[in-house]
Structures are given as C-alpha cells and as structure tokens.
Length: 622
Image 1 (cartoon, rainbow, N blue to C red):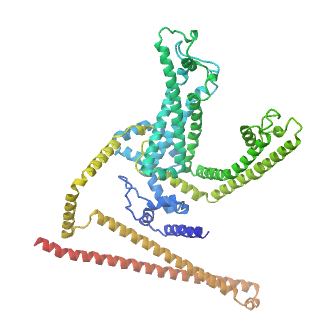
Image 2: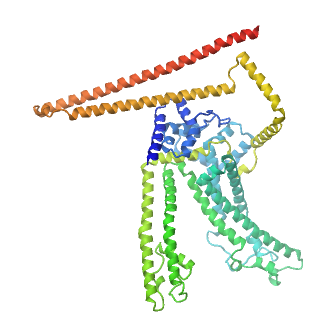
Image 3: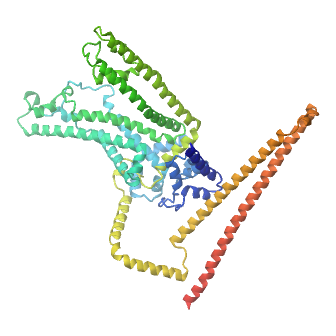
C-alpha cells in the first residue's frame, strides 16, 4: 500500500505538470523527454514522444488521457489530413469506404511515387490505419466467401465420391486449392511478413509483451499449419495420381482393382483415417477462422462507443483466467474422486458417466450448464453405499461449482465492468492512444498483401544499408586517418570560432528543454504553495467562525441576524479573494524575476563569447 501511494503521488505530479503547461513547446518538452524532438520522425518531423511511450508502457492512464496529451496525439494522428478531423462520422465512413475500394490503386501510387502528395498522405497514421483495417475486412470477407458454396449444405454426402473424369482420383478433387483459398494464403503470408518485421523492429521481448501479438502469432501459426497439412494431403494424392497416369491401359478406375497405396485416395470421406492430413487441416482452419474474427476487437478502441466495451471484454477475460485456478482445482478434485468411485461399474450403470476419466470430465463439465442428469450416479445393483456417496459428492459439486464459484465469477466481472464504467473516458483514451501509437512509427505503409511486393523506396533503403555496411567494413582500415582529419577539423572550428555544429545545436536544444522543465517544476511548487496557503486561510476562517460567542446572535432579531451573517460571509469571501490575488501576484512576480535573471545571464554569456572571438579572428587575419 505504501508503494502504491508513492506511485499515485508520482502520477499526480506528472498530471499536475501537464495542467500547468501554457503552450505547445512546454507540452512537447514533457512528452518528448531529453531527446531530439524530431528524432524518430524521419521526413515527417514527428515528435519522438519518448516519455509518452513510457507512460503507456507503465499504464499511467491519467497522464495519457490528459487533454494536452490527447491534443498532441490528435495532431499527429490526422497528419496531412487536418480538415478531416472536424468532419462528421458519415464523411469519415465515406473516406474509409473509398480507401477500401481504391486500395489497389493507392498501393500502385505509393509504389511508384512514395514522395508525392498522395504518398505522404498514405504515410499518415490515419490513412495507414484505414488501409490496414480495410485490408483485414477484405480478408474476413474472403473467409466468409470461401464457405459460400456450403451455406445451404454440401451436395456431396460423406459416403459419396465424385470426380471430373474416369481416371481422376477423388482426393485430387477435394485436396486441391481453389482460387479463393490462394487469395487467403497470400493474405496470410503478408501478415506473417508483417509480424516478422515487427519482431525485428521491436525485439522479441517487447513483441511478446503485447497480448495482441500473441493472438496474431497463434492465428497465423494455426493458418500455416492448416495450409501445410492441406498441401501434404494434396502432395500424397498427386503421387497416387501420377501412378494412375503412368499406366496408359487404365481408362476407368471403377472397373479395375487398385493397390492399397492408391485405393485409399479414392475412398469416400467416412472411410478416411482420423489422422488424415486433410481432416487435420480442416479442423485447424476452423480454429484459425474463429481467431481471425476475434481480431476485430483490436480496432474497436478507435471508436468512442465500442472502445469501453472492448476494454471491459479484455478485463473479463483476465478475470476468467484468474478464476480458472480455483475452478480447475475444484473440477479436477471431483473428476478424479467420481472416477475412483464408479470406475469398477462399467456396464452396471444406467449410463457410462464417471466410468472413465473422459466420461467423468464430460459429465462434470456439462453439469455446470445443467446438461447432465441425476441418473448419472445411479447403479443398477443394490450397492446403496456407493450410490449414496455418489449422490452426496455430485450434490456438493453442483453447489460448489454452480452456486458459489460461478456467482463469484459473475461478481468479479461486474466489479471489473463497474471500474471501467466509472472511469470510462480515461480508459478509452488510454486504449486509443495505444492503438494510435502502433501506426506512428515509420514503415508498414502498405497493407497486406501489397506489402509482399518490394517498393522502389524499400529497395533504395536496402541499397543505403548495404552501402553503410560496406563503409563500416572498410572503416577499420581508415580509422587512424579519419581521427586525424576530425581532430584538424575541430581545431580549425575552435580557431575561427565556428559555432552551430550538430553537437552544439543538440546541446542548446537540451539546455532549452531543461530550462522549460525547471520553469514548469517551479510553477508546480508555487501552485502547491498557493493551494497550501488557501487551505490555511479556509481553516483559519473555519476556526474563527466556530469560536464566535453565541451571545452576539442572541440579542439580534431574525432579520438583523440574517443581514449580519450575510455581511460577514461577504466580507470573509472578499478577504479570501484578496489574499489569493496577493499570493498569486507575488509568485508571478518572483517567477518573472527568475526568468529575466536567466535571460540576462544568457545574454552576458553570448556577449562574452563574441568578445573572446574577436581577438582570435584578428590574430588569424594577421
């Protein structure tokens, strides 16, 4: 608790500093930290926002949700599209629809003209978000359309086979990839390439720290395993088909006896092995489709209405995982106990419940939802002792699991939802900032699957990196010569008084930021002193009011007493305002005096530097 109090004091301090910022320069000084403001922006000149990244990493939610911070994020989010920020939701929806329709044309424009006006708009965070969201929506549409031919039921029954010609094996028709599945594979390969680049840029540790990345990794791994299993099934069927095609005497497969290594690939579905690669592929594909649709929750924080719901859903999942520890402990205890009780009565019960570990698991699991029967504990023979113990254990299990633990889970979920609802604005803005930050970094402009084709810009950057690598490779041979050249260059700069190098500019920028931070902290301390004096004035007035003798109001009538109390209250209020104005004026004058002293010291320093340069220049001229 003590550490939590200290943590809250630190969070209140940084939020208080943001409250006292009076211009954009001061806000940037807080958000960027002691680094170059435009260090990570590349050609865009975006702020670095290093301290804001730390605030997101350590969940300082009030700091991230502060209006000054959100204003800075909004200006970056609608980069090169400032007019779109004030538009209505309908206009923004039309823009999203236009981007989704024209995505191939926008990708072509960016490929050949990345530095054009349209290329710069495409590199903006908002446009990148819209392009990636539209690409993922198209991917989900492909998943739906891939099953469109079976919406009303498949025409081919599990015990039937169908081929296009007499020499074709049945598995050659079922295991080959359709054009829709080839498009899905291209999207999956593009997403895998995107995840590889994220692991390269963020590092494995930061990548695994984000739970959404784990969902993406699992989804793509299952998709890849599904397609590999499907390809293996097609490959084996192709080998069997090549044996048929090599025999020119075979004209109709229904009229000849096939070997076992070929006959299997002409059987109906109900006769396939349970571990057949195509069956495994279909099962994995179904899981991957479910995970793909759950990925929609990642973009929900962009909307004010759906963002808090998505946050509540995520917190609910965390509560369920915490609850699972107790749930599994109770569940396993009763599962093993009931199995030990009824494992000797296989065939002697009204059903097979609890006779094996698998049946015990099924019975207890579905009992949570009220789908198990009481007769599961009944024995056909007169073993009342075992049967009564079964009734007792089964009843205790239902009371413990259904009445106690499930209601406990519901209470936990309600508590988490209420916490988020009470602070919904802060929670939503924090989640939205995390989403926005993923699109602020340079790169990942083209969405899937257009990112698979290397653009001229990426080839140019690749050549620059190769040139840098080659120069670093030969740098060791010229190290001594370069040190001499740099030393002579520095001596010449010192001799002629040349200022304005990159190091000097960085130092001046850093000094400026430090002065801004000192000014903000001093302003924070002065504000704290004003608040403290205001509290002392209020306490003094309260003590004075309570110590007033009662005899003063006893001699007055009701109207006179009311008039006197109103006059006293007005006088106290005016006195309080005068004291606050005097305190504010005093501290503002003190701050202005300190600022003027710093400016005067800076002018004196610059004057001294100029005076020291003149003798050096005269000597060099001589």
